[in-house]
Length: 119
Image (tube, rainbow, N blue to C red; front, side):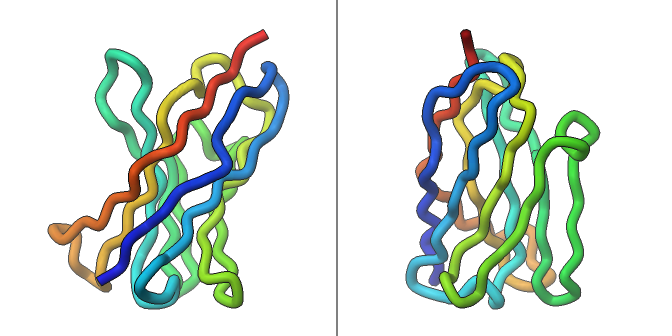
């Protein structure tokens, strides 16, 4: 059973960049589909991006698709979320989630990493 572990959060000024990492502890990146979610203070958790290694496909929410990129490095067994041109509204706790192939009811969540965008 996989245990996602996020890292890379922190404080950044508007217009800056961060790269979040999600290590696939206990398993391999190639065995799951991967999603990044975020939850801002007082708001519901929302989907940011999805990566499916089985067909190398990606999906992005409309709010982030032109600025964020999801990718994976099998050698490092890690999924990434590259975030560019960050805005204050991107401030949130970012979570990584893994799902077995074709199974969207079995979720494996990480503990989250906080991103703060402010001047």
